[in-house]
Amino acid sequence: MKHMTGFAAAACLGLAGCIGVDMDIEVLSDDTGRITGTFEMQRGMYEMAAAGGEGADFCDEEDGGTLELTDEKAICRIDRTGSFEELFADDGDDMDIPATVEPLGNGIVRVTIPLEEFADDEMDEMIEDPAMMAMFRPMLEGYAFTFSVSGAEIVNTNGEISDDGRRASFSMPLTALLDQDIDLPDAFITEVRY
Image 1: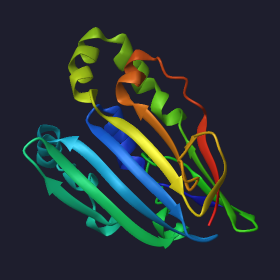
Image 2: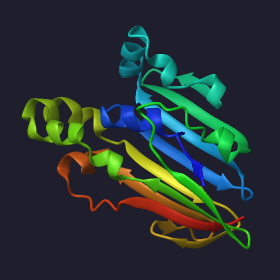
Image 3: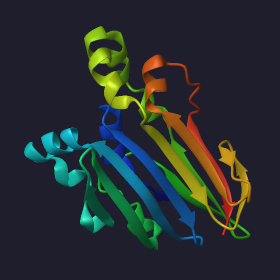
């Protein structure tokens, strides 16, 4: 089993109401993969984070990030290929989201991304505070977390399978977290043949 930390910064910023995530884990073998996708943040929120010294966490070049700034958004494009150990190194950061990549044999790998992190105590506090809700709702509109796992064939998943059967996805609009109208599974689990 490999421990994953690749979505940590994205999740933390997302819960603060300023980021959308669209990430894919492509399984290439028992121990290698490719991560591609984007993180999007409102330009104003990015500039505030950068001024506070935290902007570098949003799009780290060492993690395969390429930053693009538009008038409205800061977009981080990620593209990294390597061993799962390299891609998902456990650096002991408190912001890490634990996830696992587990070879099952016969060319099949199970990828598990826990989702309980998205319904933590900080989110509950925000929901209970009308002023916080009023401030964060506009920032959340139009943003979502979308995680996908891809390979030669999806064998089993609790996500949605693409028409070609090669990708499983889980998507969650951020406003659903505020409205508490989403039935969040404990984890997004996919078994994929490479």
